[in-house]
Image 1 (cartoon, one colour):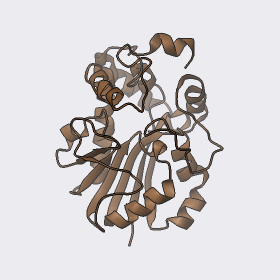
Image 2 (cartoon, helix red, strand yellow; image 1 turned 60 degrees about the horizontal axis):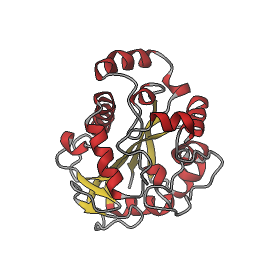
Image 3 (cartoon, rainbow, N blue to C red; image 1 turned 90 degrees about the horizontal axis):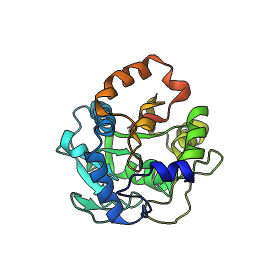
Length: 254
């Protein structure tokens, strides 16, 4: 993480393993006490809910420290291990749902932890009804984000990697560049193997404000009341060329 990362690390979770379920519980507490970060998540949830429209049977993968259920009470929350407030423990590559039983799957900062993307997308195809969606907010690759993720983030960011992530632990296995790899670098490969999943929207987001929030593992650098003016200024800039994240919508065609 480096000296700067160690100095800015949030004291509640400093030095803890991300694979320990208790760390996720503590990160939920961190999120609850950081108004600036909660406003970021609230904006992400608003984008996800808008994309869902009137779809009813919605599964959230990796609900973890988040609070989507406050905004979307009908959502089925899930995680890879047992923690309080989760409806079901599951593996994204082996979903415990019957065929065509879901309208959508949503996730926030989860896809880049999925160890076998092909298996997950095959499972989603089985479980989701025609016209359904996968909606996600994920790290995205730009020149700016690659420099930040490579130098200041604990997770690997490997734009030259394959679609598979080596198995290490339930959350420590990751490649922040995976969404960009699948949906941008290898889009022709993705379209060949999953032609039924049309990329209906891909919107780069947030070059700066998430960094200022410190995320769920670092101290916040700004108070909550600054979020709206800073976000407004950020939107005036060219988010596409320097985004840290992207909203990705996939729609299932029969």
